[in-house]
Image (cartoon, rainbow, N blue to C red; front, top):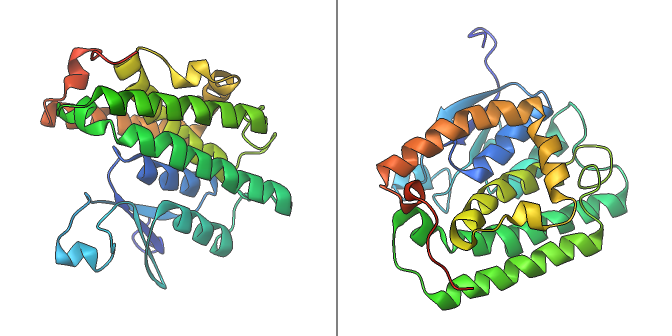
Length: 235
């Protein structure tokens, strides 16, 4: 990047975070100049001054610091140029937010509850494993009933729903393969073909090129059970 013309946006975070990767992919897709700043989630006072929950990603903007992925995506759409990633049609724009909410609440959040056992080796109850399995099946059914994905989540044009869903389903699929020996991507009608299309995007290639080595290093750092194959689970 040209030091005489620095980007006005700086994205703080870490490539292992799927939410950080959603925002980075959005910046790439919208062709917005930006700078990456390495940062981990922290409860240190200095970091909390910028990210009130101590989470990543955080976007540094001319107006101040902004956290929470959905809020950051809204800010980018409202203030930046480049391709629109929210549909112009009000109904489809709302449908996109509906998809994001389903993925966040009923796919990513339940899967995240399994992270302590999958990635850190902490004990996990059979009840939680079964509860997550049932919720993921409901989420898959909900997306199917909405008719997504088609070619992309909302039709033929890329949207924030695609970016959000892709990076959440990427980590969810890794977890379901490990815990249940099943692929949530493969088991949801239409999702595998959509996932393959997303893998072909240049933004995806750039983001995953940083994610894969960072994720591998993170697993080694934590001596993760994920390195050693599938865990036994409730069926």
